[in-house]
Image (cartoon, rainbow, N blue to C red):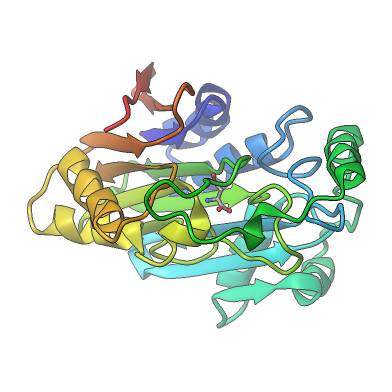
Length: 294
Ligand code: ASP
């Protein structure tokens, strides 16, 4: 089975399903699901052509984690390369490292044969130009969003997790992060246990939302550990979110969790007036789940 979050779930799961259905690995399936979203021409928050930083550049964060070996690879603030999760997979499979960042991650990607190209398109240029003429500071300079503090606008992450016929679990995620972020900002997505996490003995979890807050709590690690202790996926995700609100944070975010038996659940907070959900493809059957705010 394969699970992907947000509105691009169906397309992503469709890209992954033939791989699983023909006996392929969850690793290949998750990479295919995420690549599908990274290369969508009209998706602003994942892949190229969206969420520019304050200098107008789009940079990417991504991670992939493979259950059987508990190995992970990630890139942060990756520049000028589109398939960030595939670069992350190369970090995992070709090096002893876990996370490469910035221009050095780009150099690595080019060495691995990836094409270097601009990540700017008409949509990201328009967004940045309209913002830049206002001459405002990035909301990243605002005080922390505790209590009624202002929440940052503009972010989404594709997260996918799959279980293959061998019972092996893989999880991955990719995003262009927070709109008008400060140059050099790396969010939660490439941090194992923050943006995504899996343990072959237990299950997996993916996160989306205000990464600057969420990465302080390793919420996907927390979710998986709670499932290890017997919590259902939804209970585990709820407790991981509660840990964050318990410290007073006012934020938008969601966790989707899956245990190794195929049970899944999700909890979401904030994003008032917006839809959040996830899609599940299993044994030829595809379902969408809408998640209400807690
Ligand atoms: N977590 C991502 C980030 O902060 C964005 C999101 O998923 O909404 O970079």
